[in-house]
Image (cartoon, rainbow, N blue to C red; front, side, top):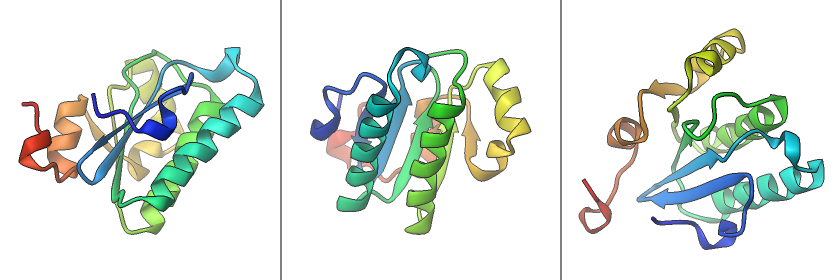
Length: 134
């Protein structure tokens, strides 16, 4: 797995790089974590976005059924940072309950929805052949 080194000890956000695309996958809701940890991890991911050649972002929601406002707020900030640089933001793996929340928040209109990570990366990312696993 191409885990981004600066985030390898993250408890909340799993962060991987696939070509020009950063994949951020919350490992669950942030309810069990302090706001300080959530904010530190989010700041690290934003730093990776701003300091690298990251062009696009895929938000992989497949690791939990529901995410609260703290995690969604952080993901919105990450998405905005990528969109301000002219990149695309996609999401994948949302449970049916989470899809309803995303629709209510109109995030399904801001983020391109895909069934799974493979589909999202196939449409959004430019991945060098040597990094492709499928």
